[in-house]
Image (cartoon, rainbow, N blue to C red):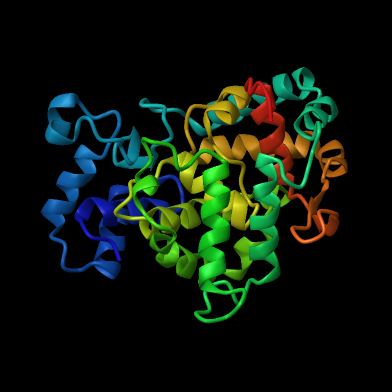
Length: 317
């Protein structure tokens, strides 16, 4: 449940199809949160707009915006670009970037570098064990008292996040026990069935909407920890395998600065431009008990994550 008008507006703009008008936001609030006064809502729309003046954003000027005005009364979700951008310009830019990446990245060599000296005890194999657990026990991950249930789910996810750098000194999770993840596990267990099977070949408008809605649910479930885009996407990668982890290395390698609809469109375009070779790089996960390959393959999103994690300059595994 959203706690403030800002939280509810964030929920609103993730739910609406782009572009959307101010009247659509008002209508959404009337249907979902009729207790919010229209005057208060319109004031929040103003302060949440990236290309509104600093003066009009007042005390919210240092908060990450939620929306960008592209013409009078018409908005899109904020994706890191503060100014208006026409849809045809976005598509042209994305195609140009994808062509550059397709020509500039040796996909096979990069994946080979990632898997160099792969070992069941190596740091990043924590992904395999976490992913295997959640994929194998989809209907049991939140069951209290079950051998494969809540406690194991919290420990699997927690250790994977620790291995992947999410429990460093500056992280809010460092000051929490594994039990803090219980609401998150419950949220993941209640996720739509479609997200469990979503991969880059499903990155149409609906698929990207699903990624963004799930990210919002994950962020809320981690409160009061302020979850970064990196943490949110690493959770989603480790559980669903549906999105690359938007960490420093991936974003540098892929040439994006935010986890946004535009960035996800670019990920989908990169996959479509290189689908056959990416599909060939889908290695099997390793089994915790035996250390041997399973029949479960890395997702396409995981392959793209590996490519640009290495491409972004990570020095070693």
